[in-house]
Length: 219
Length: 344
Image 1 (cartoon, one colour):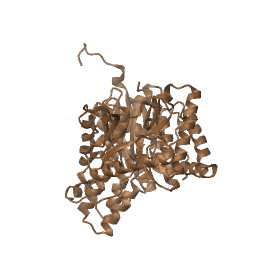
Image 2: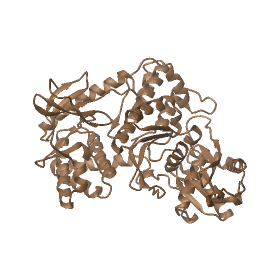
Image 3: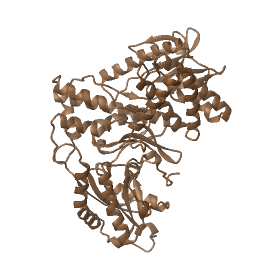
Image 4: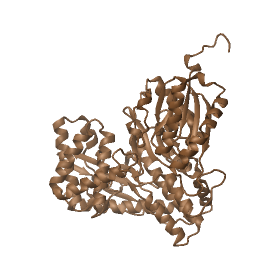
């Protein structure tokens, strides 16, 4: 942060702390994956550096796939720190809850398109929730927090990715999650192609049946 | 009792709860004011391997009368004093659940008192809250059959994260059996693993699989077994590494739920709650987030009748009665499908 002002803690998440900082005159976010005392040092280091490297790679690869993500200014693997662009906007989670039905539909369609583009390039986000999407002032959705992501050609990975999004919608937007998810999936299919999208859909159902105490599960 | 003391109506109301979802058959008695008067239990011990559902059910049928009488003796009450009968309606193993349900239906019809079907997972959370004083916790329920992180949100206990395959206790048990460990005095194999892990020094890298808020343990189990049997690593090191990886995963999802919900309490329950290492890890997390750490006492953390009795009183006071002709067991009754009107 050079000689500039002290970084300000914006959010202390479960995995990392986000600081508002200043990188050569630009408003930036410093994301530090803090060491976790509860796990052994070797394991802790492995997890933190693996996720730091992956997150920065995936932020870049998503751009290649045509998704808006924050610019990376600096990566420090030993310190598990990424300094990236600060996006002015609000979390999609907050937006959805106060949006009108039409606005909600529009944003869900957009989310589906984004995930479709990601999956088309075999980028798996790994933690698709509406808190990890930022709606900026120009109405663009930025995807953040790729720490649990991966590059994968497997159908399974795509299925899990969407299953997690569905779960996230269920637990944070329980009154209208179903419509949301249907809209997301509709535009996802448009981007990915019906044939592949259908396979992913089947995979999601299969993953759900694997879950514990699911009524639909086969004996 | 002196004349100045008021007797509340609930002082003379009792619920008898029957637990039989898996290997334990338990009968508990709770007074409606939250006093646990009895918590009798008999466990089925397989001759070899894991729980055989039919054998476990036969065991439950054989010990049912003995456990029932024990509970009444401990509570110093008579069957006619009971207000209602509650039972574990699910989720669990079919034959075991049906045995408990049959006993419950018979008692309710004979005594002509209401029957209350209770969700096993909800009961674990409720007794945990009762015993620890937690009011609105993020709960990690880790046992042989379940591994989930739940918290109350809009009328129900919502599942924030759970295992996508096997349960934590199951993972430890199966590893223990494959490693040839032997049960000590009725303790699960997890206890033997915990002891061995204390002597482990080298951390072997094993799969660490967290997907969003969920986790997967089956790959970890396979890898740990391979490290022991094929790579010939010392059992102490494998036990240590298995525990560290598995517990770090559940700790991580618990922390994520805690950060997400911004609640101020963590409750640890289920059979695996007895593990000191797991307790230490979760405690570290709560300190990080200024939350309190609550661990359910052992006898109420493993499957027990008292939790069913206590949850039965809550359901009964909110008019949730199960007519006998609708009291069929629900093998896959998820915790997030249950209404809990006693919480505001």
